[in-house]
Image (cartoon, rainbow, N blue to C red):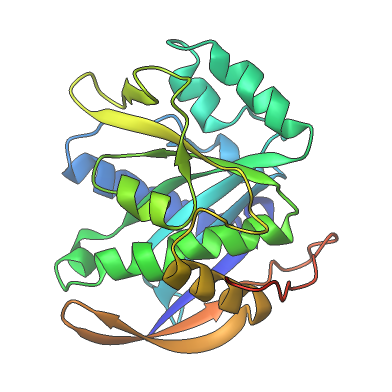
Length: 246
């Protein structure tokens, strides 16, 4: 059984440390020395929220992702990653910030979980979708992300669109000159009109029932996931939506 939960970074520094250590270990194992969101500054940013996949005991962490809300104590990681090459990113973030925007970033899963066939499941059925649920709680109308070639279809399936006005049709050499990343934006966190019907249905179910247990089917069997997606002490907690998934 795995639990997927969320918290505000400044409220749980110990969990932030475990997240950072796990993320850094995965980057190192793939030969990636550093990405813009791989630092400790976000621990103290009041507008960073974390989603982790962990053991029920909380002793083991298997993966996670972060959500930055624009306007915190740091620029969005996508601005730091892309801004040196493409200045348009700053105006684009500023434009979307008028109606609240943020970024989902730092997505990772431990290699030992990937080896068991659960890595894709955690990304597809758990962490990425949970990020959209959290964006809804935070009342973000849009959400940026940087996707690698092997995750781009996953994020497109949950409603993100490639921002072709940037770079080479949205693509840049990042985080190293021989690797590529693509900027995508989810422009309608409420309706998710570009998400597939299956993914939309699952996200809306998590939005309505953010605390639940589900049996998810992975490549090598079934895994029980306990979702706990209500951000503790969130003063602008939004009401779950019952919008139609069609």
